[in-house]
Image (cartoon, rainbow, N blue to C red):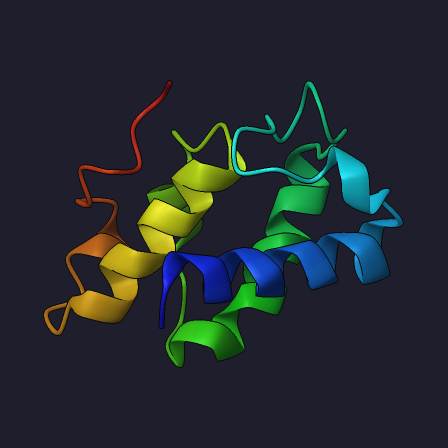
Length: 97
């Protein structure tokens, strides 16, 4: 799955679930500041992303995520990881920007 595939899935979830205007959704968009995604919304987003990776997502893996690109990077790490290290918050791409 490419970054663009993940971004398109994220875009769909953000539009349908959180009623966010499509033009506000860019890889550089900050979850809280630009998209008004608070911690409760972030948990809901993680639940909706679970089918994308086919395994349980640990919220800790997303603590340092700030932008949509950070989410994409974290999900790519989970998809490419057979060990589950990313699911335990060890994916280096999920650092604060």
